[in-house]
Length: 205
Image 1: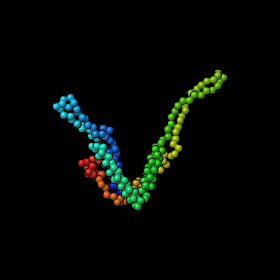
Image 2: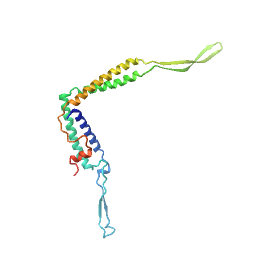
Image 3: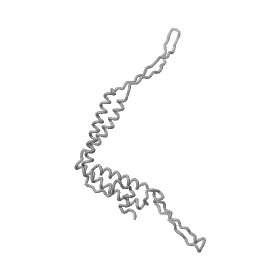
Image 4: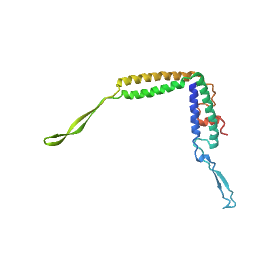
């Protein structure tokens, strides 16, 4: 299978495991009611009724327990196969991915700097002076001006360059994902539901 498909398969298996881990409290027990009718009416027979609650996932705890362990084995196996393939064919994948992420993160910050504009606001200040008549206070206008320290055009150009470089690296990542083979045979289909996969694995009697 291709590396991209292997990553997708691993992700689906992980989602199924999380789904299986959502045990309902009531579904963790087998609950029975013993109706002691004979103790009141000798001609009646006592009756045992199973009132256990089904899990919202459709699995009881034993089935979920068994399937989780099976899924974990599959998760570990595909992870090892991916690692082996990456080591042989895609050594630069992680560094390329990390670099592309950093470039996009920094590029987004630079875009914010590029959107900054010069602003001006006015307020009033209070002053005091002393004259022959005595001390007096007066009001005067204050003009507050904010000017971006970094030229927005420079920031915009840097942001575009980083985003373009990140796109180039993303294209390289896509090529690796589509070209590199992973030596692994999946036990399930990513298009199956967790319940359907459990049936195919023989979890249900």
